[in-house]
Image (tube, rainbow, N blue to C red; front, side, top):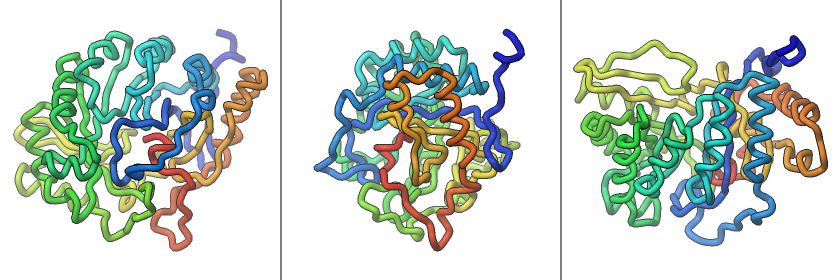
Length: 332
């Protein structure tokens, strides 16, 4: 490798180096979670608007080779509804990065082993209730048994740790916090509790519905004593059980934002680059790809977008502006 080919850090105006690429590969999902999308009336991206596997791989390769990215996460919608997913996993795994995926877990019984064999390193499974009736209310699907099978299939396939993501909403599922802690200890998975963020499909987000990460930790600590771990670059604040039976994570995106150390950029399924989950503008990489732009032009677009990244998302500000897209359209 020549000196000109050595990756150069992708740094924004606040000195944050970016090394984590989140890629949404579809806006479609087999669930209809209430805080993510409406029950009916979703307008899906036309198939030809979605980036192809080759286009996704090319953008990822530019991020890795030009800027030294070392982490890629696949998201959706629900990424497992995209046909031939192991093929994309194999292409991205060849880049030598930490490759992970966020999924609702409902199809993992059938494909966990194939994804592991293709080179997927880690997996996060979204699950917001352990109670069948409530799970149905939240997802509008009677799929809790399949998700449970999927979690166990992921563990059996070799993923370690398997992380279970729980979005905690006051008055909805906050009475299950300790139940989830117990579930993680029993099943040998790492539960991560996430504060409710203003990206719901129906714009019903209310600051009063946010259960603070400190409150979550206190509730679990009262039942299963915890010890806080030194924080690394992971956005989750980690706590381990004093009896040695695993750990939990809490992501305080609202009450304890990690914007000052954020190293992420996001690519939507239709090829729009976002410097922040809550960004109000996007850079059209799909147009560049499909009009013959070379890798240098793609790298320049990445650098320009990141250079303009905000200091923080500003959720707690009076003048906070919600993104025009919901979480299902942006990618988790």
